[in-house]
Length: 445
Image (cartoon, rainbow, N blue to C red; front, side):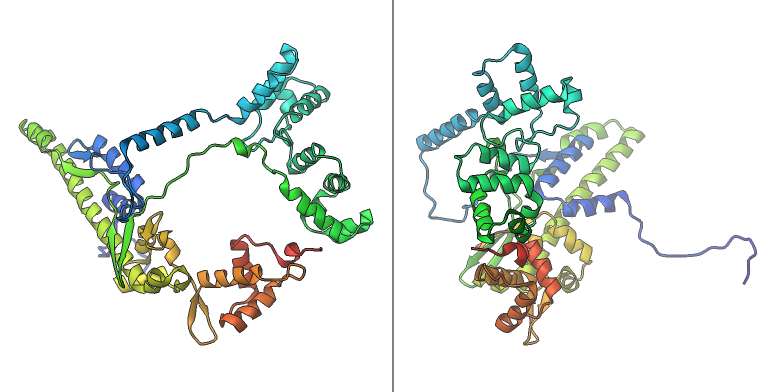
């Protein structure tokens, strides 16, 4: 081996991640809202880029429905007026509690402390007492007295420290019955055993039957675990599709919905004005900003073209989904689409990121069309989406006194549907569906 020091020339090929390439990759994965914000920021940075938001129109989910009735101006204005009145009269949790506090006969000091406690409630109506005594400069024993007064207000369960206390507070406000008393006893002394459905241990300790605990379980379903959530008035988030699929008989067509993307044009007037200075530094600045404009134009066209290619491929491979319904979704991976389009798999991933497709079956996230494959007994393939739907159907029809185990579900999937899946796969899909295990689904009545 030659270890002598020296200088040699070596020629290699490598991909350099320039700023333009980095921005092009980022632009491809932008949603319509992110892209509009990016273009607006670019127009501030580059005076030659002119961004026009006048072409942006409000998306109408029923735009392709010719049967939509026209609304008279009076009816539309009246509806808007009613919505404005409803919105202005919404009451927050803090306002609701303060209105009750104003009816109480308390001293100025007590009112101030109670008001501070109300301000410390979280959005669900819970009160974390850790360190609260020190922050409010109130002794622990007095603080608990104030908390008790706050807990006596509506809604029931307010100002609880945790879920256990919240449920018990609500039970204590309900009519005293044998069922109510048993519920209070179980939640107060055996909350964790009850939550983990270790009911046999509770039944043994309290010398009661399992069906009585089942009644308690059903009884507390009427309680509100988040008493403050009813006062949360979040505006609904509307999904705007990036591509729209229309159907005419058995023919499917796709178009990019770009009415939320502002129009980008070249500021010719500004360019002509500055180029008249005949200054080398100004010319260099104009050349740089002009190249930036052309790059953005090319990137926008490439983004639209790539989105169309991927969308068309999805329609081609998932035709049964669009014609017959969501239950006919077939297994499809991003690698498979990338190979057929002769692009990189990461390009497909960026293209479908946070983008939605409006279809005759509803609006779906683009990435939801990509599902893993499950082998069937006929040497065919089924999508994970279809397997999950089958699992839900089996559990919905089970005997709740003898719920089906994950192993039994796996066997039923093979026998009924011809889907070959393991017990672990069933457990994973069940967790993703938010369905508890068989032991926690069991009823004792």
